[in-house]
Image: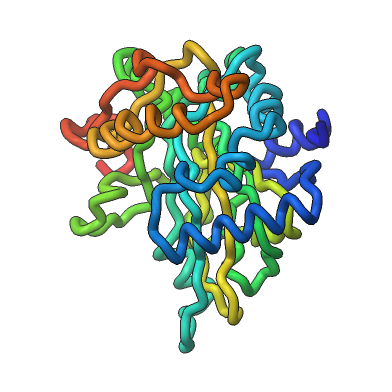
Amino acid sequence: MSFTDAQLAQYEERGAVTIDTPFTTEQLDKAEAAWDRLKQSGQPPYEDPDYIDVVQHPYFEEVAKKLLRAEAVHLWWGLAPHERGPVEPPYASLRDQWAKGCHVDIQATMEDFSATPRRMRAELWFWLNDVPVNRGAMRILEGSHRPIMEHWSRVLTPEHKAMLPRVHGLRPAPVAETALACPEHVPELSSTPWVEQEPTAAVARRGQVLILCSSGLHSAWANQDSVPRKAMGTSWVASDVRCGLPKNQRDAVMDFFPRLRSKLSPERAHIVPDDFDWLFESNYEPKWPETFTSAQ
């Protein structure tokens, strides 16, 4: 498995690392062709056998096990083809793109991140074509996951810590009332505001995987190229770790997973759990007062 201890250490320190995979050119061609078919047809991804062959490849499970320090893992979310299509100029400035787009997806404490097994979502972005800097390469504020999770360790009540990790969009203040996906905010934790810090472009070659800790700040980015950025995204969690999702996302997983499991080969069906005891509902209401302490 091409995921070294040094790369794991980089993930833990920076919140992101890009690694190689064992997929051949032929396998990548089949996966990209399946991606193209699904984008064109709009069919569910589990309907394409070539796409499923990639998802159920043991490589991703083994990476997730190492990342999460777990003997057993299963899928949490993901699978749909992810596209970052070309956009027409004029393009927003780099600072404006970062200020408007930076956010976190997962709320967790440093205790969650340090636990064995790790109580965190293992997010694997598998690139089906090259990701140069101008092709909508994701921007990541390396290392931001650590002070943010340390903050939640300090301020959240024991009751709320027990409800982590959870998918819960957060971004730097001020947050517009219309930002339904990220209605709360990540407090400023240093003398330099988050939106004034310099993110890193997550460039990659076709066939590589970006391993991301989305408890840190990151952002989508304008694709200034002439072709789309093509990704297959999956996320994983250690078995017996409970996770929170907003109701609509939880309902979607509970509908989707049995359909996916039925398409997997018998020896790989274990990567989709056959029950949902691990998945609880965690909505944006009622809000947690501790989330807003820095704004008071």
